[in-house]
Amino acid sequence: MSKFKQPEFHYSYLMPKYWLTWFGLITLYLLVQLPYPVIHFIGTRAGHLSMRFLKRRKHIARRNLELCFPNLSLENREKLLVENFESLGMGLLETGMAWFWSDSRIKKWCKVDNIEIMSRIRANGKGVLLVGVHFLTLELGGRIYGMYNPGVGVYRPHNNKLMDWVQCKGRSRSNKYFIDRHDIKGMIRELRKGEILWYAPDHDYGPRNSVFAPFFAVPQAATTIGTSILMRQANPVILPFTPKRHVDGSGYTVMVTEPPTGFPMDNSIEAAKFMNKVVEKEILKAPELYMWLHRRFKTRPAGEISLY
Image (cartoon, rainbow, N blue to C red; front, side):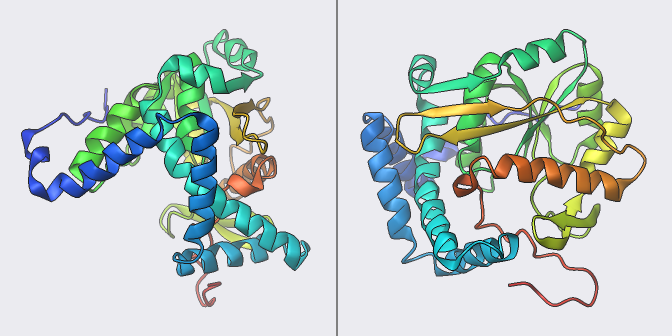
């Protein structure tokens, strides 16, 4: 079996080169010990304030919203932009909540809708491709849902070795083990065994192994063919989920959707179109939480100019 080797603590992480990282982690740990309403206040205000400093990311998010929702009024797009940055601030604290909160505290503030869907699928012995769109709440959403249905995490090692250890340790609270994101054969094996595989097909991963398909109002968005490969080789059930933060600050609901049917197995472009529609549907449940700061449309067809 091809699993990602989970990093272990090393005494070199106590060296001065990691002291700033330790300071950040300890600060994050202490912040998420505060009452949740206080965490919510700090996170949203910090996110709002960050708009003054993250000029480039602000430009990218604004441009993405303009490209995806051209019929939305400028006023409403700007409102969505502000809410998105508030969610960015919360996203950092929610990562700390996912890594450091106890199970009992998670259960106090979080719930899962339609949790019986997974039980019904697993009863048939099929693998599950758990589609986790890149929401800013995704880290916490994974922890919430993984408490009830732990799965196999698709993992990209962090460049900072200390952060890699902490990140992996935190994610292990809701994952059985990890597979490197490039190990397609390993993913197929796990799905064939009937495992749950966490998977995010919504970002622009570059021209390699991608095709162009519509995404919201953008007619040609680079979309991974990875989903098509996994579906053809393992035939899992696609199960989308959205970790939604309540606007009133009362907690979170992981919204699980009935599996979409009719996946086009024999055509990678049609498969990309299909998955983009699945992703769009989930994003529209909580557009303020989506990672609009990512350059979703950085890869363009040959000869086309940058959209940014």
